[in-house]
Length: 154
Image (cartoon, rainbow, N blue to C red; front, side):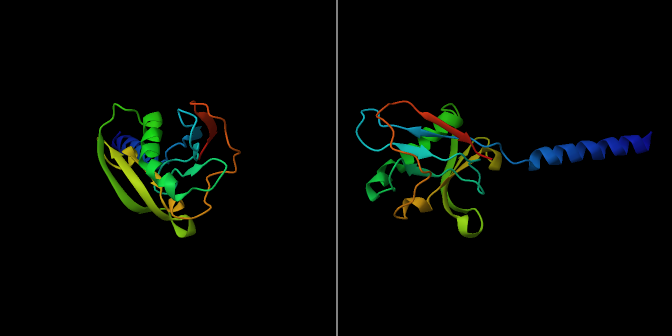
């Protein structure tokens, strides 16, 4: 009886550990268009929005330009409204190093209550500094105010 109880405790601990260690499911990428039809459309990559798989934002049909930087935070907040929800309380926003190897770099990290990595979302920053960086090879989209879905990331 005692052995069975110990075995059950170990099995429960293993299941809980596996659930905690499982990576977050990927979020679908999408495109946002300017409301008035003037200006660039931006594309969010499909990603887990984690430190090892941050969301990348690019301009559709052209490289990011210096003038696009003014939209960076608003675009990140747009993604967060889509996937996190406006009702969640932001705990902190910080710039951190994320990823590993050549794909690593700087990220904006948003952490929501109650805190921790399960409630943190990462956005890649280095592509905003590199001329010619794009998320994907999309063609320019029309002036619609709607979002276009993209594939889910892993």
